[in-house]
Amino acid sequence: MSAHETISALTYALIRDACPAHAEAGEFPQNRVSNFIEGQVSRMPDHLRLPMRVLLWAFDWSALPSTGSRFHRLPHSRRKSRIEAWKSGMGVQRDFVKFYENLAIFGWHVERYERGRA
Image (cartoon, rainbow, N blue to C red; front, top):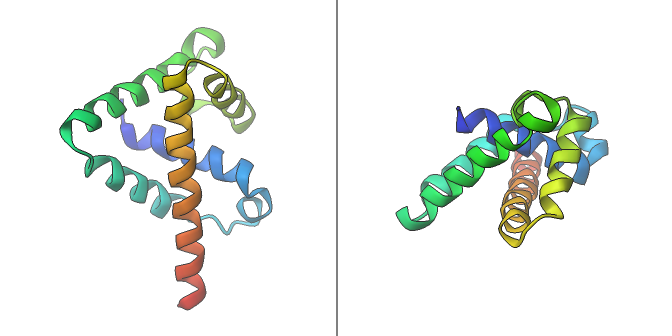
């Protein structure tokens, strides 16, 4: 599994739902924001980084039984329902989604601010 593919798909889905007008207008710097998130995860201490990678793997593969595909291969509408399922799941699942949601929205706003200054 490529963590990059899953982080990218998750990032895009989260931003698309949080800021739909900007995501639809093509103003979304998907690669830079997902790279930002990957960088944040890679800088975590070892005792946090490994569990986050395991959760990312579990999140990606958890879609397979109900959809026939892993999360990163789903269309947006199905990604959204998988995210919602994890948001309403156990505490660790909710925390996992919230972690990525917060980083995605923060990274997106940083990118918008940086583009505005350029």
